Length: 270
Image 1 (cartoon, one colour):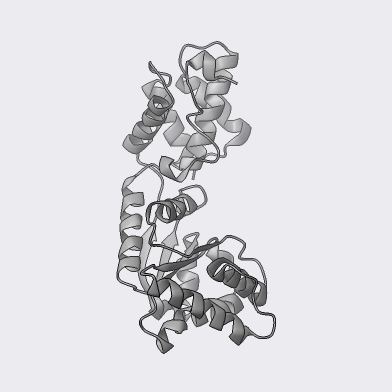
Image 2 (image 1 turned 180 degrees about the vertical axis):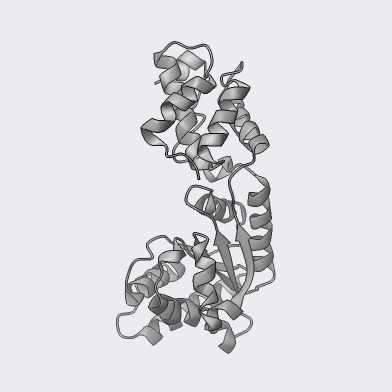
């Protein structure tokens, strides 16, 4: 709606960004390095921690898109299910076919066969449980731990399990002694620094064709303050600022405009 007014050829702050658009902030690079280390060394399980909106799912999708040897890549995003339903979802994503209905053992056997085939083809299977802080202890004990135990019977299997969720996930895992011992690496995503927020906003505008300054330095500082550096909040606030700036026929977005918008839909960052 506002693209032609600001002389842009694409949306700079989309609500659903492509994996290639993931901004490589300091904590993003560090978490990516740790996950790649886990995969490359067949190190078992990894934790990926961060509050909503900091890019956990985007990072995982970027790894999936950029690392072609990470296949099958099962990304489970609905953790609030029964252990049986969760296991069936894992089978479907890893093996690419419906789960056996006769027994839990048959399900794990199907998963093992699929991982073994991938290993033989020099691929590395990855199983991601997103929003894993919502997993109950039954799911952890009946699905996640048995998946990690597959390597006990065949150490040649190449696969990793990633538990991605809010920071509270770390304490939940710490209470499960068996699972805690299987975690090899932990990556944590955080909000952008002010410099990163500035670079992110300016780079996204430039990629969308901006030919001049659309946000003043003070406006960017206001975005950073109100968003807490959270990328999702930054996108929402910048997108709405451009829309309202277009409606008001502004030449650039000011700090006053950013602050006036924040109370409408964006809670102040703690």
